[in-house]
Image (tube, rainbow, N blue to C red; front, side, top):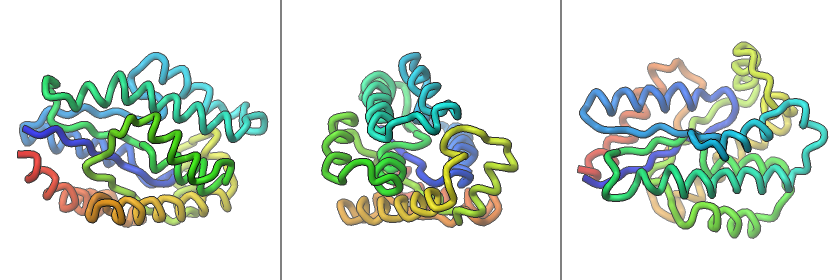
Amino acid sequence: MKKTFIVFEGSEGAGKTTVALRLKEYLQKNGSRVLFTKEPGGDDPVCRGIRSILLDPVSLKKFSHISEFLLLEGDRAQHVEFTIRPALEKSSPFNFVICDRFSGSSFAYQYFSRRAITKDWFERVDYLATGGVTPDLTIVLDIDSEKGSQRTNSAGKKDRMAKESSLFHQRAREGFLAWAKILNTKRKGSCVVIDANRPLEEVFSDVIVAIEPVITASK
């Protein structure tokens, strides 16, 4: 059976983790073995150390945007080499790898929102970090930036990203939508945008529709 790599992207409050974990349960109930992982952090000790630095609210006003970008890409390099790539190898017991955030988040946050780097540098460094590993399907959960902020505030989220300005989050949303267009230009149908402003059941129903062609192709 073909190994399938699915990535969830989206702004703060879009519900990525909730939907991704629900998809994991859905696939497992249908007989698949699924690895769920996330960025930054994953289940790697090096990545968890990087995550603790990146999400520290104290560093909000002291963090170089270039340092942030390079740390995130370093996390991705470690994540791909020791978690994602091994799980996609033929000898792996997993049928699916589901990742909460991947390259699209760096594009939306570090390039599109901050403009701390050029698109050329994003592409070069991210390709080095991923080693050419690309998702079979990327699902962008698109949410109004104001509604996303309301959700994160209600959840009591206090990390660095949650404390960014409303303009930053609006730009990030635009960045994720731009990323979807880039992916679909490179390979039609490789990215699906789903309206995440709606109730969870409606969002998840659309996710199942989106992944059915991928499930069929993996058999």
